[in-house]
Structure formats: C-alpha cells, structure tokens
Image (tube, rainbow, N blue to C red):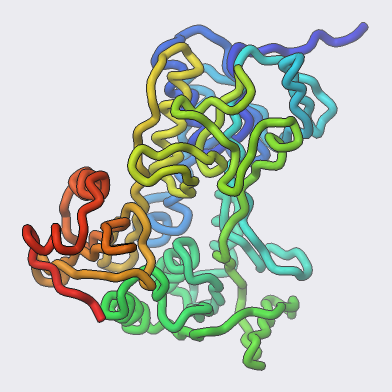
Length: 401
C-alpha cells in the first residue's frame, strides 16, 4: 500500500531565525493551519548571534538558553537533518533527500547561507562558524589557556576572536586588511577598535591569507601566504558565507545577482511561493534593490512574510541595520558603509561618534559608534539623501582625511 503523502497549509524550507519568525507571524493570524519546517540543521531554531557573542562572555548564559522552542510554542512540525532536493512548483510538492514527497498550499524559502571554508581534511578542530553544533565543537578546543587561530576580518571573525580571548583562550587573529574593519571604519576608529584587541593580548597578522592547513596531533598547523606556519589547538573560520539560492533557481524561480527576487510583499516570481532572510533580493524603500545578511533583517522579514502567508496584505518597509559589539565597544550602521567613500565625523561626546558616508556628495551611509541615537533617525536622514553642504548647515561635522 502506498503511504499517503503529507500535506501542510504552510511549508517552510529552512530552520533559521527567519523560519522561526515566519511561524510566529503565521500563528499571529492563523491559529489552526498546519505548519511544517524542513531544516538541514540538527537543532531546532535558535538565536544565532549568541554563537559569536553572548555565549562567550556571559557565564550565566548557556547554549540551551538560545533555543526558541518553535515546534512546541507554535504547534509546528519540524523535520531536522533534512534537505529539500527539488521543488515541483506546478504540483505544489517538494522532494527531500530522504526520498519523501511533501505537498503544500503555500511555500516559504528561508534557506539562509552556507559558511565558506578552506580546502582541507575535515575535522572538528577546523570550524567555519555557522551553527550551534559548530559553537559546541569550538568549545571543546578552547578555554583552559588553549590556543585558537581565527581567520576573517568580518563580523563573525572579529566577534568570535573577541569572545574567545575573553574565555581563557589565547587567540591569533589572521586578517587580510591593514587593520580590523579597515574597509568600513575611518582609520581613527579602526585603530581604536584594533587596540582593544591588542590590549586583551591578541596576536594579529595583518594583510595575511591562509593558504592551507593540516591536522597534527591534538591540533592544527596553519600556513600563511608570507611563509609563516602557525600551530594551535583549533582553527575557526569567519571568511564569509554564500547564499543558498540554488534550490529556487533550479525550480525556475527568478534569481538575480543579489539572490531570490521578491516583490514588496516578499513574494517570488512564482505565485504561492515567498522568500525571506539572507537569500532575498528585495526592493528596499530607502536603499533600493539589495540583499542583507543581517539578523535584524532575518527577524523582520520572517515575521512579515509569515503574516503575508496567513493572509495579511502589507509592504515590507524595513531597512536593515547591521551591528556588532565586542569588549566594551558597540556600533550600528545603515546604508553603504565603505571607508573608500568621503567620510565626515560628528563627535557627540567622549568616545561617541557618528560617521557620515557620502557618494557623489550625497549621504549614502551612517555609522553610529556608541552614539545611542535611535537608528530610525538615521534612516530618515538617509531617505532624504542630503548633500554634504546640507548637513554642514545643521550639524557640526568634520571631514575625515
């Protein structure tokens, strides 16, 4: 006898924070519709930012504290360690790596991104941080004054390096830039930022690339392009991530250079299929067509799209803010933040700054350095796209050379 095919009112592909919030959005309107989530992860949805931040610096905060309990809280079915291999858009069916076919009324793609890694032998001592299980593996080769090499000058690399050194771990940080975040921050802030790492005792290799690694007894040997060879108890990679949009593309859903193309309702080119989070190319009301791999965007787009699936009609109007905090420094930014642009600084107090970025003499990005100014205020400024002269009339801003 052929087993009856499972069918759900709402089917979500992906198990991250967008997926969790989509379930919350659906349940805020539809209390009874059946919901299923298909996730490649071994864990139910959890708060990912904590993997590189709070879990390392708060001894009273533990890995179980980041769990959302999505299935229990919202009466949803979650299929873990499962991937979708094909979407049959005509018949509203997906196929999985377990050869199961699942039918749906409405489908959400929230497949997120995959962390980039290095070519080499796979090991629990070489981790491209992305998941809760990755975090737990790093815990095993860190602490107790062990030595960890961190590679990557972005959010994950800078945060996990700071977290590790505050968790009784010796850290060597390998970055391609002249300083930490030199491609985003003006030099004087990049220097302040990096000095905090140096004060903590971190060894930093600048303008360096890892060309390879090999496993040694109880550790890892890392090779740099300048000929240096480093040894450590473990290697952590924060070298970026690639959007998981191939499933959509293979199904005939429109994809562009930014990701899966959606409209202002986050609906894809195929009726009945929506997308949210890292993978979407969407029309931002302030910044134009773009993608955003930031947690606040994941949360906001997930919650919004869940409501859309459940019948609400609205326009996604959240302009993403990206942020980070390490040691005693916190910053937030919106728009195009690039140190190659014209930059002007506004000092609001001791160690409090706002940096304004201009392209063709018009405002395109803002960095808030511990300024405590509401980011909605800066979004309104960006929306008006003032010139340098316009801002100088109302703010005391100084050109950064």
